[in-house]
Image (cartoon, rainbow over all chains, first blue to last red; front, side, top):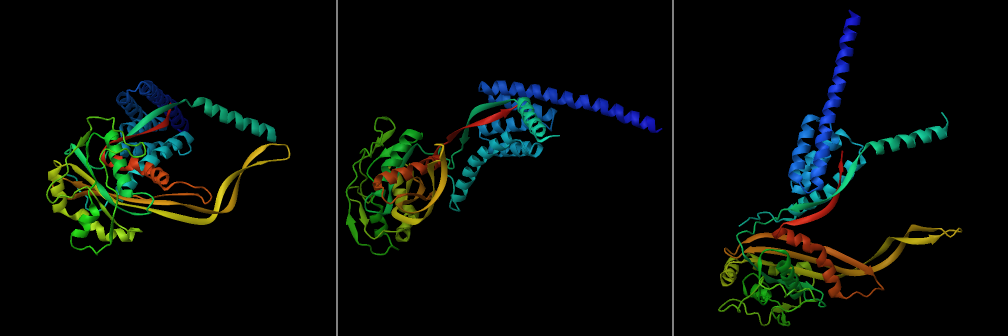
Amino acid sequence: MRTRVLTIFLLLGATAAPLAADARSDAKKQVEFGIAVAQRGLWREAIYRWERAAQIDPKYAEAYNDLAIAYEHEGDLEKARVAYEKALELEPNNALIKQNYELFKEINDRTTRKDTQDDPGNQNP
Amino acid sequence: MTLATRILSSVAAILFIAGCTNYYEIPIETPIKPKLDVSAFQRVLVAGFIAGGTDDVDGNLETTRLLRSQLRTKSDLRVIDTDVLPLMEVATETPGTPEVKAEPTRSVPPSDGAEGREREGKEGKAETKPEPKGEAPQAATPEKPAAIKDAKDLEPYEHVFADVEYWKKIGEEYQNPLIVTGTVMFTPHQRSGIVQREEEVYDSFGRRRVVPVRTYMERKGYILQPKFVFIDGRTGTVMHSENFREEVLYNANQSTPALSSYFELMDRLIPSFLSTLSSQKIKGTRVLLQ
């Protein structure tokens, strides 16, 4: 009985590992393509690719980092913040993600600081 | 395991990790949306400012010229080129203002170059307008009370920005523009204390090192405190206002002209001023990871 259970576990382990590796490999292809198009200035396509990568492998920190950069470039600072935080949650010690996040925060803080300088009761035309 | 082996294996591990990570530096431009929706306006009138502080710089004239110049080149709005409004007079004429001894100041010719900052070459963006008639302020001799020496002295005049009827009238005369006005305080400032600075030192082998040194220093400079008020020329109401504060300090031995310090400080806050009206792009570099 014990042997059977062990065998099942081993089999599960043996099949799960390649599945995860496949997911990472597929996601990596999307990330690579996203980088190539982003370097040509096609940021919308890059966003699509990196979102796909994050869907395929939700634990792929690099995909979230790249996605955050693309959102930042598009001016969607809230989405960028969420993506950076997800990337850092997955890889808290990644110095490059940290560096990107620090630079992003400078801009994000500046815009938030500006909002707090407003007088209350301001209204648009 | 010896120490050498341990160090070697650590270095190998770092190199391995670095080798595995592919990264690409990429330039990005982050667009920052304008704080105010000014799409309803085609023109902007920088009306003038209630200014105080040092007598070395006319905060009203310089700020008006600088903002007009910046808006002309960095916004889509057409800048109305006219004389500055004598806001002090207007403020003293309306109720709620204490009597202030006024002294005349020089008049402001329109389209005058200010320290090479005015770019009159941008034709088609600047609009000239005949002087307003009737009750509208005549631009000939704006008056500046000598009493304004600090921010508190400005307070009695600030009610002018809430004078809806006055601004509505100005708006009608200039075809309902966005009106930019406010207050500007530019005051001398000095501070002394312990300052940390870097100093080059050479050791006995002639090697150069930079070390932090703490020294007592007397410094002097200026504080610039502008408040920008944005008024809807159609209704005369305040849409938005922002306060800024910038300061600069120099070594007490250094002689820096007040006007130069004024422009140095304005340069720092102009991007924030512009980002209220038009979208700005912040350039930077990020690292894409694979």
